[in-house]
Image 1: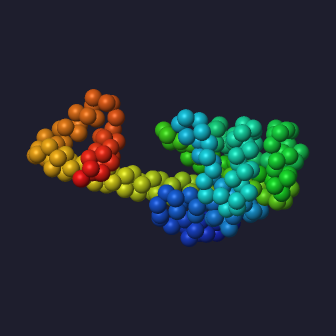
Image 2: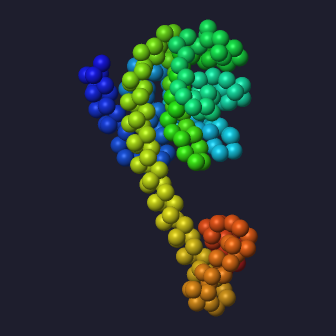
Image 3: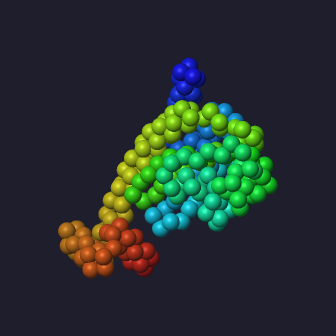
Length: 224
Protein backbone atom coordinates (compact mmCIF):
# COMPACT_ATOMS: atom_id res chain seq x y z
CA UNK A 1 0.00 0.00 0.00
CA UNK A 2 2.86 2.40 0.81
CA UNK A 3 4.35 1.98 -2.66
CA UNK A 4 0.91 2.54 -4.15
CA UNK A 5 0.51 5.79 -2.21
CA UNK A 6 3.92 7.01 -3.33
CA UNK A 7 3.06 6.23 -6.94
CA UNK A 8 -0.26 8.02 -6.60
CA UNK A 9 1.40 11.07 -5.05
CA UNK A 10 3.83 11.26 -7.97
CA UNK A 11 1.01 11.00 -10.50
CA UNK A 12 -0.99 13.67 -8.69
CA UNK A 13 1.97 16.04 -8.59
CA UNK A 14 2.24 15.70 -12.37
CA UNK A 15 -1.53 16.02 -12.89
CA UNK A 16 -2.09 19.06 -10.63
CA UNK A 17 0.46 21.74 -11.59
CA UNK A 18 -0.15 25.31 -10.34
CA UNK A 19 -2.90 27.08 -12.25
CA UNK A 20 -5.90 29.36 -11.93
CA UNK A 21 -9.09 28.23 -10.19
CA UNK A 22 -11.01 27.01 -13.26
CA UNK A 23 -7.98 25.11 -14.54
CA UNK A 24 -7.38 23.54 -11.15
CA UNK A 25 -10.96 22.32 -10.76
CA UNK A 26 -10.83 20.72 -14.21
CA UNK A 27 -7.45 19.15 -13.49
CA UNK A 28 -8.75 17.64 -10.24
CA UNK A 29 -11.64 15.81 -11.91
CA UNK A 30 -9.48 14.74 -14.85
CA UNK A 31 -6.82 13.45 -12.44
CA UNK A 32 -9.44 11.51 -10.48
CA UNK A 33 -10.39 9.57 -13.61
CA UNK A 34 -6.77 9.06 -14.63
CA UNK A 35 -5.25 8.20 -11.26
CA UNK A 36 -7.84 6.67 -8.92
CA UNK A 37 -8.85 3.03 -9.50
CA UNK A 38 -12.30 2.27 -10.98
CA UNK A 39 -13.24 5.93 -11.50
CA UNK A 40 -14.97 6.29 -14.87
CA UNK A 41 -16.36 9.82 -14.39
CA UNK A 42 -15.88 12.68 -11.96
CA UNK A 43 -17.29 16.11 -11.10
CA UNK A 44 -17.18 18.68 -8.31
CA UNK A 45 -20.24 19.93 -6.43
CA UNK A 46 -20.13 23.39 -4.88
CA UNK A 47 -22.66 24.57 -2.31
CA UNK A 48 -22.76 28.38 -2.09
CA UNK A 49 -23.56 30.40 1.03
CA UNK A 50 -27.20 30.73 -0.07
CA UNK A 51 -27.54 26.94 -0.22
CA UNK A 52 -27.53 26.71 -4.03
CA UNK A 53 -25.62 23.75 -5.47
CA UNK A 54 -23.71 23.80 -8.76
CA UNK A 55 -21.66 21.23 -10.66
CA UNK A 56 -18.31 22.26 -12.11
CA UNK A 57 -15.61 20.53 -14.15
CA UNK A 58 -17.58 17.36 -15.05
CA UNK A 59 -15.58 14.87 -17.09
CA UNK A 60 -18.76 13.72 -18.88
CA UNK A 61 -21.88 15.68 -19.87
CA UNK A 62 -24.21 13.12 -18.27
CA UNK A 63 -22.99 14.21 -14.83
CA UNK A 64 -24.64 17.61 -15.16
CA UNK A 65 -28.03 15.88 -15.16
CA UNK A 66 -27.05 13.19 -12.63
CA UNK A 67 -25.74 15.74 -10.15
CA UNK A 68 -28.72 18.05 -10.70
CA UNK A 69 -31.10 15.20 -9.87
CA UNK A 70 -29.26 14.60 -6.60
CA UNK A 71 -29.59 18.29 -5.72
CA UNK A 72 -33.28 18.21 -6.62
CA UNK A 73 -33.96 15.04 -4.62
CA UNK A 74 -31.63 16.15 -1.80
CA UNK A 75 -30.32 12.62 -1.89
CA UNK A 76 -27.20 10.76 -3.06
CA UNK A 77 -23.45 10.78 -2.31
CA UNK A 78 -22.93 13.89 -4.43
CA UNK A 79 -25.52 15.92 -2.49
CA UNK A 80 -24.65 14.63 0.96
CA UNK A 81 -20.89 15.16 0.64
CA UNK A 82 -21.40 18.78 -0.48
CA UNK A 83 -24.21 19.65 1.93
CA UNK A 84 -23.03 17.73 5.00
CA UNK A 85 -19.63 17.02 6.50
CA UNK A 86 -17.96 13.70 5.79
CA UNK A 87 -17.39 11.30 2.92
CA UNK A 88 -20.12 9.11 1.45
CA UNK A 89 -19.35 5.76 -0.19
CA UNK A 90 -21.83 3.58 -2.08
CA UNK A 91 -20.27 0.46 -3.58
CA UNK A 92 -23.62 -0.72 -5.02
CA UNK A 93 -25.89 2.25 -5.71
CA UNK A 94 -28.70 0.13 -7.19
CA UNK A 95 -29.20 -1.62 -3.85
CA UNK A 96 -28.36 1.21 -1.49
CA UNK A 97 -31.36 1.82 0.76
CA UNK A 98 -30.00 5.22 1.78
CA UNK A 99 -30.93 6.57 -1.65
CA UNK A 100 -34.37 5.11 -2.54
CA UNK A 101 -35.21 7.80 -5.11
CA UNK A 102 -31.77 8.56 -6.53
CA UNK A 103 -30.63 4.98 -7.16
CA UNK A 104 -32.94 4.58 -10.18
CA UNK A 105 -31.41 7.74 -11.68
CA UNK A 106 -27.92 6.35 -11.17
CA UNK A 107 -28.73 2.96 -12.70
CA UNK A 108 -30.29 4.59 -15.76
CA UNK A 109 -27.07 6.59 -16.25
CA UNK A 110 -24.94 3.44 -16.00
CA UNK A 111 -23.59 4.29 -12.55
CA UNK A 112 -23.03 1.28 -10.32
CA UNK A 113 -20.85 2.72 -7.53
CA UNK A 114 -20.29 6.24 -6.30
CA UNK A 115 -18.32 8.27 -3.77
CA UNK A 116 -18.67 11.83 -2.49
CA UNK A 117 -15.48 13.23 -0.92
CA UNK A 118 -15.59 16.55 0.94
CA UNK A 119 -12.96 18.61 -0.83
CA UNK A 120 -13.00 22.04 0.81
CA UNK A 121 -14.83 24.31 3.24
CA UNK A 122 -14.72 28.09 3.14
CA UNK A 123 -16.78 31.00 4.41
CA UNK A 124 -18.54 31.34 1.07
CA UNK A 125 -18.82 27.77 -0.19
CA UNK A 126 -18.31 24.06 0.39
CA UNK A 127 -17.11 21.61 -2.21
CA UNK A 128 -17.17 17.87 -2.77
CA UNK A 129 -15.43 15.66 -5.30
CA UNK A 130 -17.80 13.15 -6.93
CA UNK A 131 -16.41 9.84 -8.16
CA UNK A 132 -18.50 7.54 -10.36
CA UNK A 133 -17.85 3.96 -11.47
CA UNK A 134 -19.61 1.56 -13.83
CA UNK A 135 -18.53 -1.41 -11.69
CA UNK A 136 -20.45 -2.78 -8.70
CA UNK A 137 -18.11 -3.15 -5.74
CA UNK A 138 -15.83 -0.32 -6.78
CA UNK A 139 -14.37 1.93 -4.06
CA UNK A 140 -14.42 -0.73 -1.33
CA UNK A 141 -10.73 -0.05 -0.59
CA UNK A 142 -10.54 3.61 -1.56
CA UNK A 143 -9.58 4.71 1.99
CA UNK A 144 -6.05 6.10 2.07
CA UNK A 145 -6.03 6.79 -1.66
CA UNK A 146 -9.01 9.13 -1.30
CA UNK A 147 -7.38 10.88 1.67
CA UNK A 148 -4.17 11.47 -0.26
CA UNK A 149 -6.07 12.69 -3.32
CA UNK A 150 -8.08 15.11 -1.17
CA UNK A 151 -4.94 16.50 0.47
CA UNK A 152 -3.15 17.00 -2.84
CA UNK A 153 -6.25 18.59 -4.37
CA UNK A 154 -6.67 20.91 -1.37
CA UNK A 155 -3.10 22.14 -1.83
CA UNK A 156 -3.72 22.84 -5.51
CA UNK A 157 -6.98 24.63 -4.69
CA UNK A 158 -5.37 26.74 -1.97
CA UNK A 159 -2.74 27.95 -4.44
CA UNK A 160 -5.38 28.64 -7.11
CA UNK A 161 -7.53 30.59 -4.66
CA UNK A 162 -4.55 32.72 -3.64
CA UNK A 163 -3.89 33.49 -7.30
CA UNK A 164 -7.57 34.34 -7.80
CA UNK A 165 -7.58 36.63 -4.76
CA UNK A 166 -4.53 38.50 -6.03
CA UNK A 167 -6.05 38.86 -9.48
CA UNK A 168 -9.31 40.15 -7.99
CA UNK A 169 -7.37 42.69 -5.93
CA UNK A 170 -5.48 43.94 -8.99
CA UNK A 171 -8.70 44.15 -11.00
CA UNK A 172 -10.40 46.10 -8.20
CA UNK A 173 -7.54 48.60 -8.02
CA UNK A 174 -7.68 49.09 -11.78
CA UNK A 175 -11.47 49.63 -11.74
CA UNK A 176 -11.27 52.15 -8.91
CA UNK A 177 -8.41 53.96 -10.61
CA UNK A 178 -10.38 54.24 -13.85
CA UNK A 179 -13.47 55.48 -12.00
CA UNK A 180 -11.40 58.10 -10.14
CA UNK A 181 -10.04 59.30 -13.48
CA UNK A 182 -13.52 59.71 -14.95
CA UNK A 183 -14.81 61.58 -11.88
CA UNK A 184 -11.75 63.89 -11.95
CA UNK A 185 -12.37 64.76 -15.57
CA UNK A 186 -16.15 65.07 -15.33
CA UNK A 187 -16.30 67.20 -12.17
CA UNK A 188 -12.88 68.91 -12.35
CA UNK A 189 -11.69 67.38 -9.07
CA UNK A 190 -8.21 66.34 -7.99
CA UNK A 191 -7.54 62.66 -7.37
CA UNK A 192 -8.02 62.84 -3.60
CA UNK A 193 -11.42 64.54 -3.83
CA UNK A 194 -12.52 62.22 -6.63
CA UNK A 195 -11.64 59.18 -4.52
CA UNK A 196 -13.41 60.74 -1.49
CA UNK A 197 -16.51 61.23 -3.66
CA UNK A 198 -16.56 57.53 -4.59
CA UNK A 199 -15.90 56.52 -0.98
CA UNK A 200 -18.88 58.62 0.23
CA UNK A 201 -21.13 56.95 -2.34
CA UNK A 202 -19.92 53.58 -1.15
CA UNK A 203 -20.54 54.43 2.51
CA UNK A 204 -23.92 56.10 1.94
CA UNK A 205 -25.27 53.22 -0.12
CA UNK A 206 -23.52 50.53 1.96
CA UNK A 207 -22.04 48.83 -1.10
CA UNK A 208 -18.47 47.94 -1.91
CA UNK A 209 -16.25 50.55 -3.51
CA UNK A 210 -15.66 48.20 -6.42
CA UNK A 211 -19.40 48.15 -7.17
CA UNK A 212 -19.53 51.95 -7.13
CA UNK A 213 -16.53 52.08 -9.48
CA UNK A 214 -18.19 49.64 -11.89
CA UNK A 215 -21.35 51.77 -11.92
CA UNK A 216 -19.39 54.96 -12.55
CA UNK A 217 -17.57 53.32 -15.43
CA UNK A 218 -20.86 52.06 -16.86
CA UNK A 219 -22.78 55.34 -16.50
CA UNK A 220 -20.29 58.20 -16.79
CA UNK A 221 -17.95 56.29 -19.09
CA UNK A 222 -20.80 55.54 -21.49
CA UNK A 223 -21.66 59.23 -21.86
CA UNK A 224 -18.10 60.28 -22.66
